[in-house]
Image (cartoon, rainbow, N blue to C red; front, top):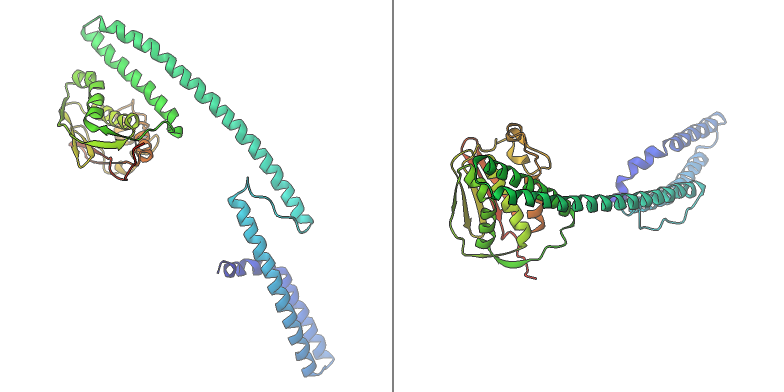
Length: 328
């Protein structure tokens, strides 16, 4: 069936040969007419030539298709598949060029991997080192209980969260440290809420949470990251009111009374770097938090979704029972 689709391309590729064939046929017919050759002999010659041409074209088309599918195979596996034996000088030259490109590509990939590894190593080290002065400043601010110190502590917490997000971003492509176990969902949620308690208090946002009393199979570290990102966003875009956390059939629902998300922005809020209308209002928005949350949820085989209305608030859903995960 695939071979039949190649017939138009084959005819177009050899259109010059086909045109020559028609020209030669016309010349043959003209000479036969001028010399008044016997019609029976002419038809016999035409029929014989036609049969020979059909056989030769069929054989040539078969070889044409065979070569085509070999090239398709090479395109699918350009670095691992052995090149076929060249049948002529043109193919030999073409395969030599391919081998040279392959070698250059392998060298480039090796170089890029080395550079990427060095890049990850440097920034991971830098981010771990920057945590030390952040912790030191936090301890210094704890000794002072003034309005200014509380404001500085809140900003320092945000800095720490940005550093943490950068670390998560670096780890995202290599989530080999995931360990799936059965965890108490209440414990994971309460830890996240406690972590963001200073920001809830500083913005005077009420937190409503009813114990879930259930266990989920997940990776605690990465699920905590998703919950924390959603809480961070809820705080960022809620000026007054509350954040409510509920669990229904192992679906974690984080609802805020914030500014909401525009309908046209909803399909794209999980895209990398997309901030939407709210991001243009909130100048500090990077469009990375929700992107990393969606990627982490996908890695965990969980499902992350959202509903929202402008001026009313947003609801984020983390479905932890999308797939049946096995405990390690």
